[in-house]
Length: 512
Ligand SMILES: CCCCCCCC/C=C\CCCCCCCC(=O)N[C@@H](Cc1c[nH]c2ccccc12)C(=O)O
Ligand SMILES: [Zn+2]
Ligand SMILES: [Zn+2]
Image (cartoon, rainbow, N blue to C red; front, side, top):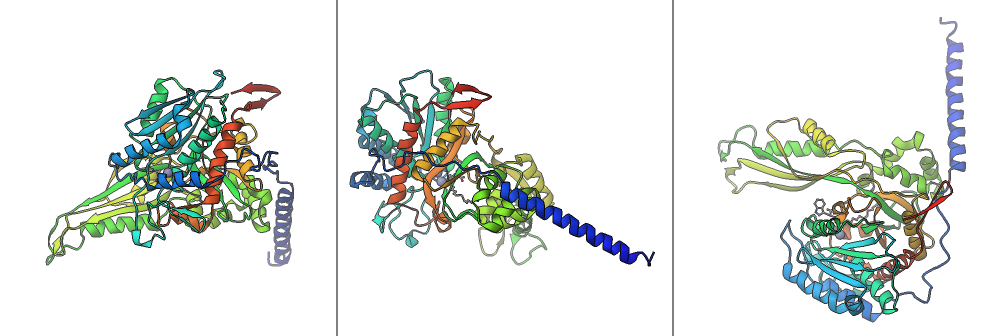
């Protein structure tokens, strides 16, 4: 046995070296031959004579839109007077849209707006552009560089709540429609514009009702585009070009109220455990035990494939060989909040309340957890995981609100709507890569799921990592250049939707 040891060791080492050599060869071959999913941009650029300039008049309209304080606070608690004023302002600001015989406008659920622009070809399925009228409340007002409802123009940026979420797309799509209609353009395909008034609190009285109205009309929609992920500049690891992130799916959510009820009493005679202490331990366990990293199992894996050939070298090797490096990429993604959101179901502790007086032991402690559920997981799985982690029957878990992850919309060369969207993005951003991904937050589209199987979430503006905290945060702003891109994106999209959407399958051509 001992005499054979050198021979055995040699064989083991040889086996190891051989395996390594084969793996390296496969990795190199796959990296070099990995297919490119990117297509060259179409001819038409934004240098067209029809380009919509962000001139003084349009910027003034956008500034005014920001000045309406259309804040949503809680479900059913908003700012009805501001909404009503904003709706009147919209009507006054886009006279051609509001006087055209081609346009029908319905006010739905008191303040939400549903426009139907009649296309000349009734055989084509309509499509829908969505946004919302409301905004989230202001935080840390003192830290804003310009007053949050001023719409002030400063150093090439328009500041204010709603500039990126989402009055840019509401005003931008209306500007594009006004521009087209005032040039006597009648679209071939019927177009809906849907603007909910309470998206920021779940859309229960706005988008939900719009969805019901369209369902009652028996409407089927060819595709829906709502707010969503942006054109990233430096957002994705290993990608140096601009990356247009088109969300073809959306995470689910589960909002839980955690409650502990124990005996209260005089602070001079505490028991060994209190409601506050028990709940704190539960919360702390949830934060210490994140949900499993699922990177590579859902649409995020496609995102890596779509950009693999364009990545800087170490990342190119990783992305072309997810069969081997998926765990390593999963780890890289888990390191930053904005990429971690793509890797797993996230756990955010959003409320923590207990106690009424310094010398009274609180009999009750309450916390709220906001989970965003990875597309490959489920509400039940998340609930089960939390129960196991907390492992304490004294902590009651009550569901406030939940939704499973959305279905995935078609994408890639087999999907004419996705390709049309990609082409439109490339008209505005000729050098950008375009990739399918999923939305880490939620949108009004959850109320439109039965209207269309092709639902996309995309914001046609550029965002850098330092811009991300401006979402729902301080100093929300949009550059004039980005607002101009937004208007022109919608303009090109409306024009492109008049071209036939052909589905090329096995030599047949079907029209949607
Ligand atoms: C590898 C690529 C990295 C890319 C990084 C980052 C991309 C992400 C960029 C932007 C994300 C922007 C998110 C915009 C979200 C706008 C929508 C929104 O705010 N939705 C609310 C909706 C909501 C309101 N009330 C409830 C209740 C329950 C669920 C949802 C909501 C939200 O999601 O909270
Ligand atoms: Zn929004
Ligand atoms: Zn928002």
